[in-house]
Length: 386
Image (tube, rainbow, N blue to C red; front, side, top):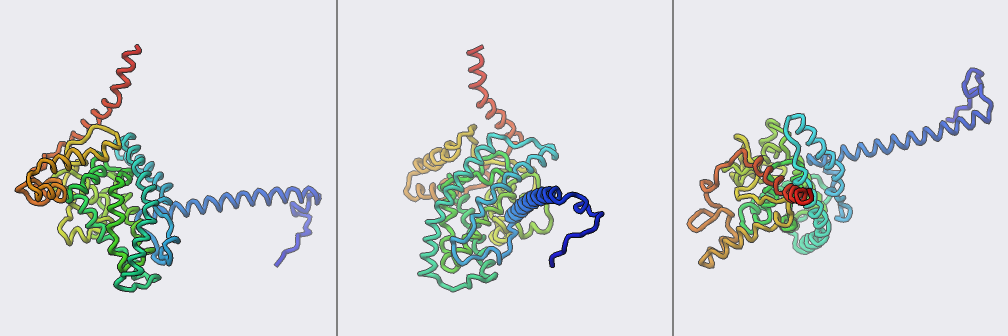
């Protein structure tokens, strides 16, 4: 219903001459339109950030993430970059409030650089992976799960989690795989940016290991969970979140993932799950936090921020040298495919008693050494030109 303008002389508009009133009315309308547009854009942006934050915790409605075609699946991993940047800043603010020092900028730069390469290659590689998945699904699938059913969504979630557990475990317990994955673990601090600290070799392994799932899971739903499985792990990499109570019996949390990143003997080869701790409990690899954790790898760390060196030094220093030192063909194969701690006469994954005791001051000493290595050329240059 259209309401006619009031003829009341007390009306503000009615007391102004018509042309002036019209001009002012247009100005007010234009201003209101701009204000409404600004509020609308701000509201949409806030809603988007909240939704992305929910993705970090696997908070997504099944019905809104079920797709009939793989081309319709959003690139969630790229879309979370804004909220990821926000989390990096928030984490550093919380570290400050908790009287922890800031994360090392050099490490954060290395991590983000590795992550950008990882995501770029992943986006390109997913096309190849999806073609393989569709080939298997279309020609060899062993069961027809309904594509638009919530139960299929949850079956896919559990299947991806199960495969991820074993993929992640293999990266630790097969030496030639650990040669790549050690880059993720040789950081002596754990913060949100460490999530990005992965190699292209890790990426290829992560992408192709879920291949058997394409025999029964529709590829679009599989792609959704492959992304959320990695996105969920962003918030696991932090020291600012403590105990979260009973949910830790089932759900993976930062406290439990810190154990996974520890080099204390009781932390080795533990807590492989992404979203869930269920399979760690079933297969005997669960470990609760016991005492102060020292992060990093048991091998002597390279005192460098050179990404290429950190990516590849282990292939030569530990894999190739061990392979070359073995006398029999069988031992040479074990040097490649047994655990990094294996040696002739020892169990497949080695002995925990061989792991050196941790030094809680080691990360600080390493930090000082690294800063000395960075500043030495500058100091030397200044002395020459003094």
